Amino acid sequence: KLASYSIIKKKGKKFILIKSTTFMNRSGKSTRYWALQEKIDIENILVITDDLYLPFGTLRLKGKGSSGGHNGLKDIESELNTSYYPRLRIGIGQEKKSFDQVKFVLDHWDSNEQKEILEITERCSEIIINFGLEGLNATMNKFNGK
Image (cartoon, rainbow, N blue to C red):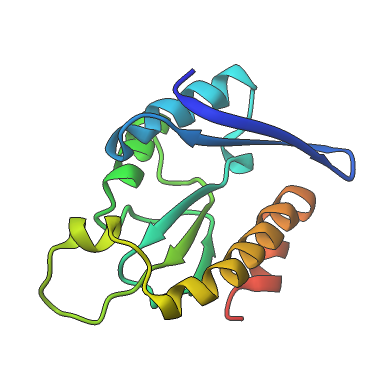
């Protein structure tokens, strides 16, 4: 309901991966539904999102924060009634000061970016698994700034 999902197990831990099927700016609804359905504490939820203001490929893991203008994060905050939830931001960067943000976010990767996507995806997978196995602080210490 409200999301495509997959369940994997790693070292005895269960990971429930969801991709909201709602519009991005209503993704909090699916986050809340699955957290309640699976009885997942907020500190064990990891929201993964793009970040227009981080350089392309930069990964930043945080335990709390503002939405930074991201409508999906605003909705998640609203549905969870807190901004204190872990999130992994993936930099999609932009060079121009003035441009059509919607077109930029929904556009295709250029050839240079396409070459880096697999590596970025692999790093994200490592962070996600580490978060589930070792927790937020250990994962931030291991991966942030690298």
